[in-house]
Length: 306
Image 1 (cartoon, rainbow, N blue to C red):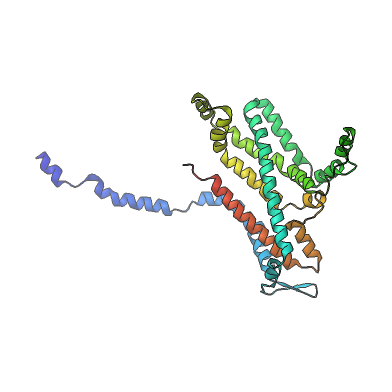
Image 2: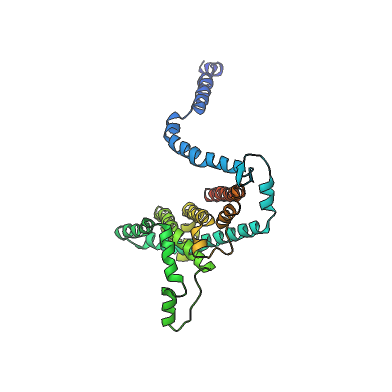
């Protein structure tokens, strides 16, 4: 009897399965209004201060300048003019190389500092060092750049110190070295902070497990610490690349403006006949480059490890 009932009675879950699927579908289609309301300010900010200005920038790149006045048209002359000029590509390659080089150097210098603060200092000392890293941002970047001119000039403080050591004057201002000094001034504290915050939240048990398995200090850093802090390291490098790629102050006031970067080329273009549409072409190319770099860096940072 019991076996016959079990054979003839339908499964209990079969009748509720369609209802459960419908509830799951309704949950999937439900709009997260609470999350949208909380994120609305940042969406409005991005629309007003990024999307709309970017759209206007792209639009005026197709305009023309006639009698020193911009005329709304839709022509490719500005794009074809800039892309056919060697000085534009020279400035683009120079800017890209300088920004990439600064990103690598700043990241390499910042990582030992961040690692030491995260793992070798107590909490009280770490708080003080974080405060010291924030302090440079109290002063304008332009003021800090001007102060470096006092140090790097031919009769400056550094050359005076070299003279006391019997070394002749070394040209540091209006050189590539001067530009990199400005890049370090701009990015190094920020990169150290971003790397530090990522290193501080690494699970220490992973490091202890690596040591227990016989891994040395350098191997642990390479195989455990750096992969665990990969997101912070990549994001810090991305910030450094973005800031140096679009920087105008250091290449001009410490590097002498020669060879020109894309930022200085924008200024020169606007001064020559009020060519704002051609300057918009340069700015659009810069933004596209930064967007591609940002998407690639974020994708690499959040990629799952095998």
